Image (cartoon, rainbow, N blue to C red; front, top):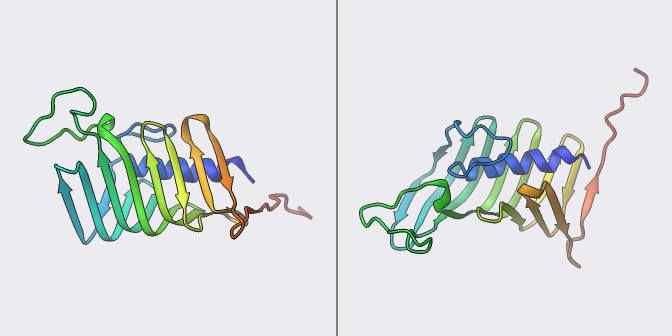
Length: 177
């Protein structure tokens, strides 16, 4: 499969979800526009939860889900003093982001879907679960779990007895031209 398929989709997904965390290949100045039915910030749980028809847009990248949860690292967890008024939401404060329930994303001609997508900030790891599939034109790959190690530009697609890895590769050559 084209290396670009998995790389571009996943980097775009990570860049959108982890806007506060610098990501390779993305413009950190692009805003992230999130729309949802509700948003709840819980300082005690260090979470920001967007729920109901969630749409996140950053540049050309779009993602939809029913639930998007940002898990923040407490200042106490990092050895810094916690501000009781409101913790800073800097990139280093992001632990993980979890998109759940009918997760779909699109970047140009590239699309993907899963039931759950989790981005681990410290590891720069994206894990797609629940019938994950990625498409780029006629090319596609699906499996039980797709793991993408952003900093290593490496992916692992895992199968299971019920969901084997399945990849479709199409030639870009136009015959007769």
